Amino acid sequence: MIWLVAEDDTDILSLVATMIQAWGHTPLTFTSGHKVWQWLDQFEAGDNQDMLPSFALMDIRMPGKKGNEVARRIRQIPALQHIPIALMTAYSLNEKERHAMMHQDGVDYIIAKPLPEFQQLFVLLDSIIAKKQSRA
Image 1: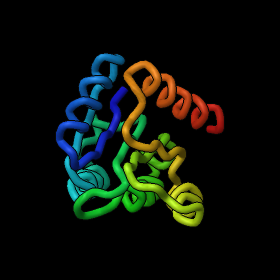
Image 2 (image 1 turned 90 degrees about the vertical axis):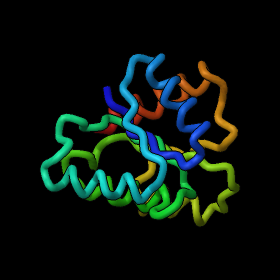
Image 3 (image 1 turned 45 degrees about the vertical axis):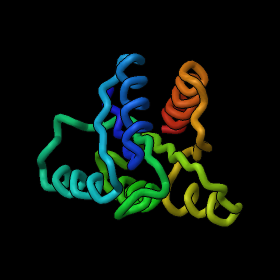
Image 4 (image 1 turned 180 degrees about the horizontal axis):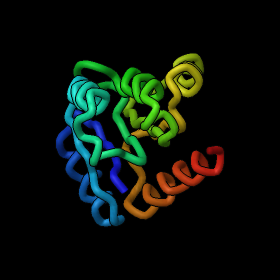
């Protein structure tokens, strides 16, 4: 499975990509929301069709487009609209922000940073994916 990962902190991006590979998946990595947006433009134009992600894990606050804005865009693309989407943040969100991201932007889960350790993160992400798949 291909997992789309967007994170502007290159150390975190590298660590998460390494974990994803250790879990047997292929990371599709981006260092900004803008770069994901460009990739989505290409995907909608018919390019990158062989790189169809089955899960998206993105930072909320990134240069260019924010993770929730990218999530909203993913939900508008028929081939991607049903994939589970988790956002990561080191910032505290108020209930209104959290609700908007979950209900208006189509985010399935929001993970607080620092991220859980390796095995706990695997269990968490696996449960997010399983829950989304059970609703499909």
